[in-house]
Image 1 (cartoon, rainbow, N blue to C red):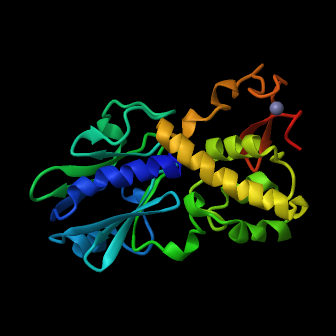
Image 2 (cartoon, helix red, strand yellow; image 1 turned 45 degrees about the vertical axis):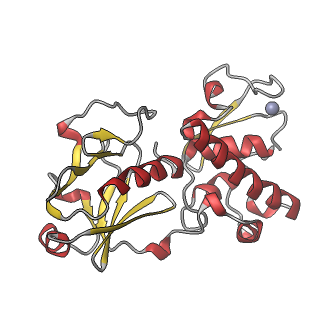
Image 3 (cartoon, helix red, strand yellow; image 1 turned 90 degrees about the vertical axis):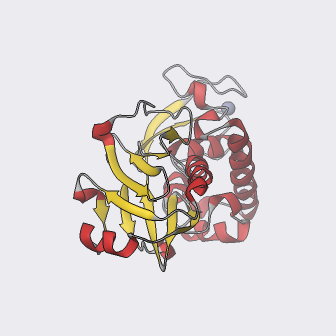
Length: 258
Ligand SMILES: [Zn+2]
């Protein structure tokens, strides 16, 4: 599943198309386009316009075109292909084969090439002018001060980290890796977090993102190979616990995460 790290790689790849002029757009199934604009309004807003910026907020990729932005959300299995080249060589849960039937949105340029979204399971979407204020502070730059809002919540820490309005960019794998590294049990509520926990969490989030970005993806965490039945904690060897937390399969160490 693309998390902030993968979407940032898409952003970097999409920069190749900066300055090009949009010639045409194909969205084979119009339900992939969400928000207030239908396909004709969408086309009208971007045809003949230049791609002048590519940004990322949390897991949302933004293409700046004239005075509007096109938002791309990659859901569980979405990927971005730039000029027929995948932005990431290998991504967990998805195949790299260019499958035409999974093409959800193709933006063609007058000069050359295209930006294409492939999304087999179709949990992603495209939106003209998405509300950027709905995404919380970016996880890659999160501060302890911004995380103090967790302390007034009775929701689980896993749910809080996954809530894109509170902190933008984390998905299931990064959340489990961060909580494992922090020694924090995912089912604990936000209210139980002390100030020292908040500081540890904020620094661990930043450090984990930096390290896994260098390794090449959200699936490159130390816990990853042990996310299976019989898997054990890489630190103390204790068998990992698995449960559904915040609706997601969650793995943690019952020994050192408390
Ligand atoms: Zn452990």
